[in-house]
Length: 293
Image (cartoon, rainbow, N blue to C red; front, side, top):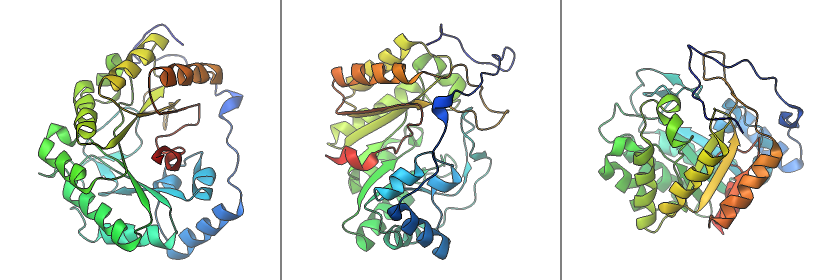
């Protein structure tokens, strides 16, 4: 990996050509086709599609799908993310029911729920979060849940609503190493994210976090990040390649070789993570259904 550097607009790195190991196979399989037909027929929305996830076929085939709640406009402007930034619309009180209906129609075995940041709302959107979990459990009692949550700006009474409904797994992504956090996650704080994960584990909830590689971090910094996550007893880690959504976003400093991802997986497991998903095409919800055990 690279010597530590921080990508900036004043001193952007040269554009790095995309390597062959990032080629994506088209989704196939009968299970995928059946879900695809249901999604099309009922005009359902998943972040799997809108985010052009490279693992959509594999996940849908395994009965896993990811849904984004609380709209599609975020109050934050992270340098890696392609979600629109601005003033969001009012929270929709009927959204939990619609998402639960989608989960039921798609016969989802393991649902992953994520959201934009809603710093404009006093509760950070936590009540809609809790209602969505309850609605899915009501309509699909056999479906397990993972929630990929924001930091709720450190307002712990809002995090408490997530703890109260106790999803099987709660994920909160560090996204990058400590040194790059201010550049990559402008309104977030590295230690605040660690505190989110610490409080969740303290409440007995299984926790997960994800880190993108290729933004200029060093190998040693990634290992240090693992140590920080283990210090709050985070149990599941995902490591994947950062890909620049548009030329306006942070550039890719380096495409990390699959061998490096494999080495990091080995180190992570040795440090005590129960699961480490590590590879160029790994995303936060990759193999999510396997992390329940």
